[in-house]
Length: 511
Image 1 (tube, rainbow, N blue to C red):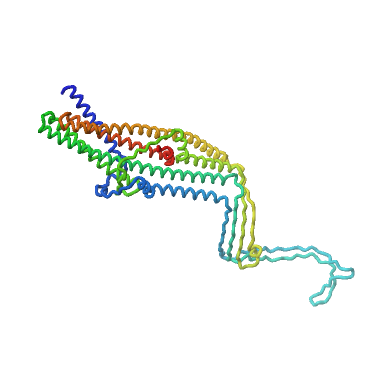
Image 2: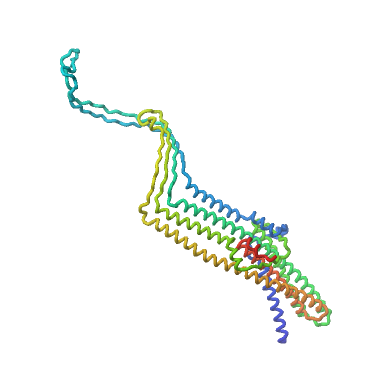
């Protein structure tokens, strides 16, 4: 083999390898889809439903199980916030009870003896207290009372009946807490904002996944159609090569026919792979939308739309901070951390509460302790709890809360730079794809014209077989590159939506 022919054949096979390497990662796009979708059979895929991208997004937001989970997380946070607000209200409770004792309680008054000293009687002179004998005969007079002792026997006093029923109404109202309730309220509000930002991110992630899978399915269908068209042209060329080899002037050799046949069969195997990937992409789209593994969705769009994006990068980054869910989460975290600091500081202050009770007691006994005065009444009081020493517990709680707050502030700076870099990366990627779009479009158009010219020249035996095959592969290669650029642009727009929210792109789209 001459050196010139060797170089020509080397270029030819290098082009074939490049074509295969380009199609493999693109056609293998569906390889990143969930494994569960790979078991979808041809019969199940045959019943595809054709949907547009807005319809797919709407269905995904209704069917996805991630969205209800994030919404329930918001409800949990809101319920916790209401729990924190409950501390501002007075706490009122009622109690009621019935009691039966084995016997009535009593009070045993012990026996006692009282000594009474002699006491004179204040009587006028000449008068006295008559003293009579047992026969009522006056035997003398007494002008004073002699000393004597009086003995009182032990007494068993019943206090109440053994059966009692009681009811009470209690009130406790915290008047001053040193900022504890306000701190808890701030933490709860921060948690609500955090969960809402997380729900926002979930919606964005669902939309991003569906959008990328949708355009991935469109790309897979385009590549499959491209493969089929290229295979059809290659088969026609192979048939022409065989005719020219057998019936022509001898310029086309058997080696040209065999090399052409190898390329055709290789391309046929690739088309089978592209067909599988297209089916897998449709099933993966349905899976991403929250549908069952047996479902399959066919995208309505035949091509991937190319929507240029223009704008100032600084303005785009500035606007991104208004919609980025991570930025919302860091702001919510700062609010919660500030509330935690205030809650910890409240440990240094006293707590004052108003207390009150209204009670009623029913007992059939009306003596002892079961008097009308004791059976009903009310009490009102003010209580104070003053912290004196807790082993430096409060001080260290404050130090922990302040350190956590400082940590979140530093993370905010890192996130600010990170968001800027992410937006810049997506923006530069979009700029690059916009430049590559026109270049690949021109290259695809030129490759199509070149393939058409070489095919007609080959029919008249004006060019070699290798040049025709190379022109057909070059057209497929340029077309695949152009389709890939369109997909990359759509994927970068979806990524930008995920970073900053869908509202931002509307401000920077080229009319």
